[in-house]
Length: 366
Length: 163
Image (cartoon, rainbow over all chains, first blue to last red):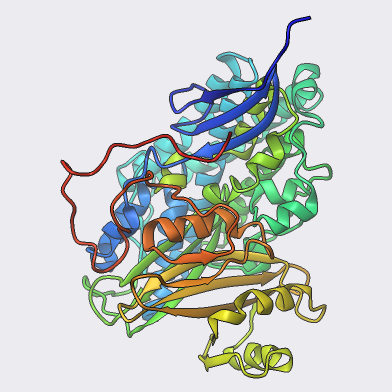
């Protein structure tokens, strides 16, 4: 019999299934992962340092570039932190517009995550195209509202940059009317799909205690059975006035993480429905000076982004630029326990596990 | 709504078990002596009436005279949050104890803080750079890091870690 020995394989940074430039160093015994380590930083662009040279208003477009699949949520978290630091009151209408926008963004982001995960599992092309079709509709809506498809710079300190145009409402209502049926179809095709279940059930189990201890957040944490959602636990904007459920998984495996996103999209639709009904008239932006000079001090604001708790920790020294601008990036922190999820699985499962955590390297590396 | 413990409430809870380690009580946060950080964190996590089971965020701020490490804690069962701070004076070797033995979630965040700010986390199981590469000169988020000469920066080398 031939002697065997463990060997090391680089997966990435150029790899179609690592969603950007994630590089994994895997120690393998045949096909089985013995050890794994993520090697980060290929997309590091020092955004936190960059923010220290910009005024508070100028920090918003830079946050667009972090998690480029959910830029609205990045804008929102940053704006909330600046408002907390500077004591800015936001008009009622703006809080509702913010919620509508961030929930549309959540659907768009989850669509992309679901499509690419299915692509990684070998369902080439078709599911990704269906999900991207849905995402395109939302991007069209965003383009109508703020002129951009990916980097919006829409939610600003004090409100939003401009009011919703009248054409916005019929388009969103059309989307809200059509998407649930599509979602039902996806659920019917995917929920009991034998190939999907074979690839995901019992794979990459994230135990509840480990998920909490490793600071996992978002669908990754909720799939492990922890009903922790910032929108419910610490409501911001107007989430305390809206009714929605927080889906929770049981096993914490890839299947649960996948299904969490499908269920969350449905809840997001319900939130958008309610917010549209309640949308009050009035101002959409408080009069905020172009150059904000908050009192010296610090502030931490967090939101539930599609990937988890997105937090901004800002320190002001009284000047026009933040003294320190720290981003608590959910993708980065969700990778902390990646090794524990990967060890013992096959190489083909690595792709599924990484895909099910749903990382965006722009946010991991910042 | 998550109830944020005020600095006074958290200071009182800490002083019950660590009478002399509270350095300063702020409105929303407590600054503690850095030597006691890990023990205090163990206490905050294990104490049933506090139950801070999750460490949300660890980061540091360069205040020129000292580095301030900021811990955001959250209790999922009680829906409470708290902010703990520790100060590391000096620029040559500022250090605080690592809290990775308490919460695994601190692992990458402490490595990031070491990488970008140069705060050493004493007792971290593998304190290596995470975003920049081994051999990068200095820590770019420090206030005295102004620029570097691209021509003299050594090229990236293979990260050490796995065998």
